[in-house]
Length: 109
Length: 115
Image 1: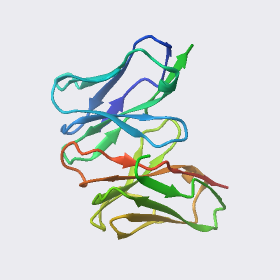
Image 2: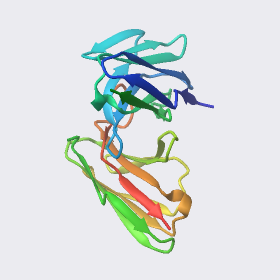
Image 3: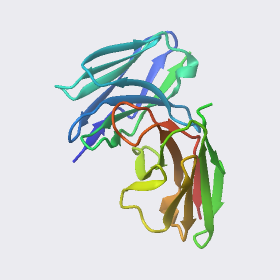
Image 4: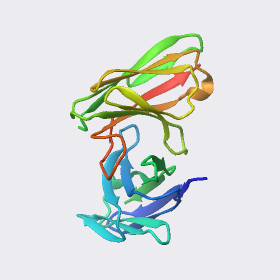
């Protein structure tokens, strides 16, 4: 079966750095997405990785290793507004998005 | 502002009611999606439409009936729902229905409670 694993919940301190991991087992691979979802709001696109390596976008970076079936989202200089759920999703060989259950990130002052 | 709107934002209905959820996208996209999001579970894809034709139906019970009258509007008609259908229903759109790295843009969702 197809599976996306990410931690259920993480806690970090304002101003610090946090890394949210995502491991996947899918039938084929056509890219990995990270989305952010604040409580009661729409998921919003953060990043897309299809090749191995690190993609940096401001305070957020996303890393992919296809051979290990692994990705992480790195958030730097954490702000209170970064408290949200972070969703990892993989496009399989049929170009269907397979979603993880999301990681709830709690930022403390 | 993502360009995808959904109404209503909240809905409470009994098991014998009939209601409809509405989604509208203002992005000029060709594909639209319905997802179900339950607490602590992955997003579940329900239906995919491309250019107003249904291309995906992930074994969704017949009490959920989608309708796509044009590429900008998507409806989800609900009838004789069960309490376990209570969830957040998200609509999304994308330029095309699957290939490559095109992004899906989501609406804010309809929070549905079935009593």
